[in-house]
Length: 452
Ligand SMILES: Cc1cc2nc3c(=O)[nH]c(=O)nc-3n(C[C@H](O)[C@H](O)[C@H](O)COP(=O)(O)OP(=O)(O)OC[C@H]3O[C@@H](n4cnc5c(N)ncnc54)[C@H](O)[C@@H]3O)c2cc1C
Image (cartoon, rainbow, N blue to C red; front, side):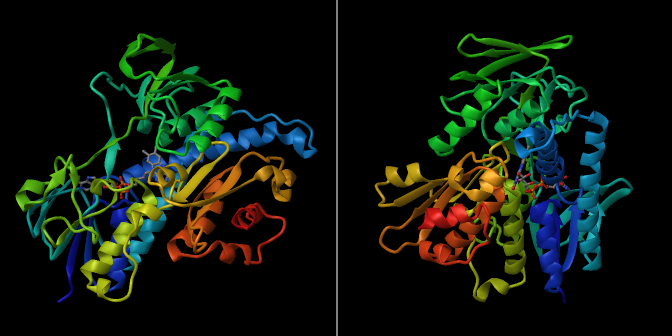
């Protein structure tokens, strides 16, 4: 009899697991309460990138004269922006549904929870359904974290999910949180012409990133007129009519038209029936081993719920690995998931992307490292495109030449990092990059130069 595999949560972790397990012969049921494709994925990741792309198109028109064109002027069409976001989400959800249905995956619309180690209960609009499972994947994702001092109203005090786009374009947006999500929102609303203030709790934006990389972004923000309040932690947000006031722990106060909370996420684990099945958690996240198994071996967790790197790409790869494990395929030759080798990007201007070992982290452990850096200002393609900002940095082992990591700041960094991600995952050496016959002129040539 086919393995009965029940998945709760149809984001990148859940739907990738569903598709792979179905391909290998499992009888798969996917339970989703909102949007197949994932709430954090289709309601956060995708619309935020879509809006950044719109801001990017506006920036391109401002650079028109530098490209030998008469000056152009683009104006934001707020309704069109909303429609564009919705149509992208619809198309992506539609394509996931088509694939899963073609593979025979049963999709149950409703809210799922564990009733016991092998039982899942689904609350649907038309009643309750109980399912028996040989294996279960919990992939319910996360939602924006709301601090005690804030009461989001969806109008002027916003979580990230209220911002695609907000009901009105902010005159002055105060962004709380200077991690990846916060800086992307700063960039997005600044490119729409809003006044923006960023509250930075440390002395550097992107506190987890290479200081050199963060410095490039701070310079860009300051040049564009973003106000940075460094070393300030927000402790209060109040709304009075059309005004929002944010108070900080050092006594500073900022008044704007809107405030946006970008201070992380909390896992969707509270109503999952974890106790009923004896599944252990740590800080609300399901604890997992390298196969994404919880302490109950046939119950898996993947994606944001697993407390590993909160990225769609990581969630999808975990889902794939879970499907392989459920179907017993992990015994054949395969690569273990290595979270340290995940590429990630920040969709600001310039874009920022990195993978593998970080320079500061390597030096702090005393590890010997070869670091080479090449600016895009010497790249023919960057000059042709009229955007020579940024650099490529490659970290390699001085003894073997094996590529250990890298950072890229500049146009198309999120695409270019794929070359370094492949090198890091496959254990390629710098000579493998240098000896590849690349396209000319292309931004990727800077990678080859940095690898030299
Ligand atoms: C603003 C923002 C921007 C981001 N940008 C990027 C980016 O550029 N690149 C990137 O890689 N990552 C990005 N991320 C992170 C990424 O969105 C998440 O890491 C990813 O969506 C996690 O996937 P998941 O499958 O764990 O969860 P989700 O995508 O959240 O999917 C979980 C699904 O489970 C469903 N669900 C929850 N509880 C139940 C239940 N009890 N029963 C049934 N269904 C349930 C939800 O409705 C949801 O559809 C961003 C996140 C945010 C907040």
